[in-house]
Length: 119
Length: 106
Image (cartoon, rainbow over all chains, first blue to last red; front, side, top):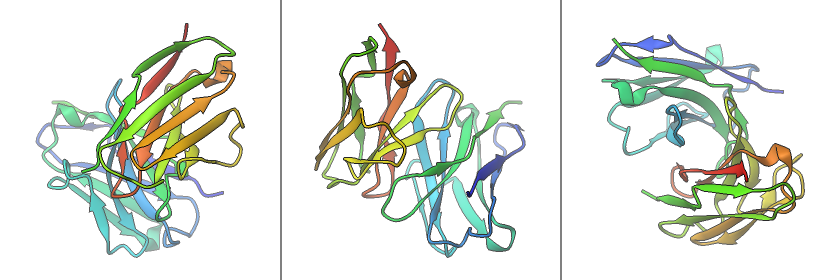
């Protein structure tokens, strides 16, 4: 069964760039899924950040984060990544990677990785 | 943007109770609505999709209904393992989550 595993630096400095990667456990990152990032600030609810299509060409973003977020797909390495620029303490959260068909909900999630923004 | 509003934010209930959570969309999303359960320190898990279809493996005490802008999640005979936070999510236009409903022990 496919599994998703996030990895990231743990700590990012304010005004810096946050980068987190999701490894897909099988060679099906190009299957007809949309690959998403969702985050959850401490004690808060879930926030969808954005998604990338299996082709690696099409992306959609949460309008509130669109100017700072970028999602990419590496088919050869079975992973997809999120970059978030100009981070502040408000970007401190657990970042989850997840997948969905279209139109469909998220049916598989990674365990999440905590990224803290602090000097 | 489509906004999703859940109510209540917190619900205190006892084992065996029937529990209903409401989710409202700011515009029609047809039946493109999902419900998730999240326990502390864990990733969310899909319970229901397309407003009323139970995900494989989810107990039948969970049910969903609604279409357009009004949706409900019902748990009949609440069990100890059901105390958690529940989120609705629309996937009609991009994706948006409700703010969550925490079901706690009365």
